[in-house]
Image 1: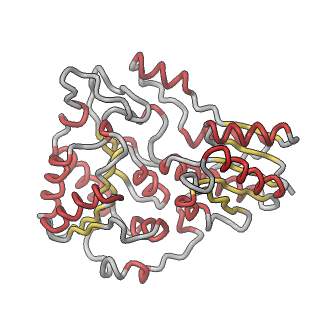
Image 2: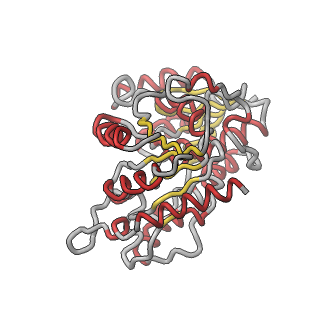
Length: 347
């Protein structure tokens, strides 16, 4: 029996994209054991993937921070007798763990993030062909370790029973169409202007058959979402009201999710909910599009400066920093995309 340590600590969306790969590999090799090392907050994503999958949660802000935290991690995992290490992150923390495991006789493989390819795509704006998807890069790590596996994952709730009663504190039984909206991201270059997003919500809320669920986190985001929920009918702010597993549960009942290039696109993908995504500084061709999502549902405009960043962290490079990549996307385009997908689901 092999015991495989899989490392992917952050970010949320990248960790979510690991779920289909872990499930598929673990299903192909039921005689082996797979332990996913990730942030404690992300652990629920992997807790129901199979009897041979478990989680090693990290508290990287406190207990497992810095050099002391590294030694605490090594003290825990060395006695676990892992035979293989799949480094799906390739950052300083995972490199240190990987180095120690290699010199103590473990078979190790790391992800090839294609940093050079992504840099060239950003510099030259040559967007075709698309780069390898992150999920494919994850799979290649297992291939090199000797665990090739076909993609067999479909839906997170294929192996976990849905219980709507867990959502009754949030909403009543589903009636009409449910639209999720996740308007935030970590970086401004990936956020559709809030005044424009509010207009989208206003238009959608006029349809008495549509209920809107707003997804966010933290005090600042909640201030915005709670205000929208008060202003527009059948609009619910979910900030801080659901744990991760119940958030996935609610998302699974949605007819569509509207999101940025952010984690909620990937969460919806795990439960086979179609996503209309809005792209600004980043681009789907860089390899971070939602799992099994239709590329026709990606909203973006062509500009000579796009994409300007892999992750969206670079300030706008245009004169006046006008973020034209987002500002020039009209609200009715977003609404029309949503209505088109909703109509397709009805037919």
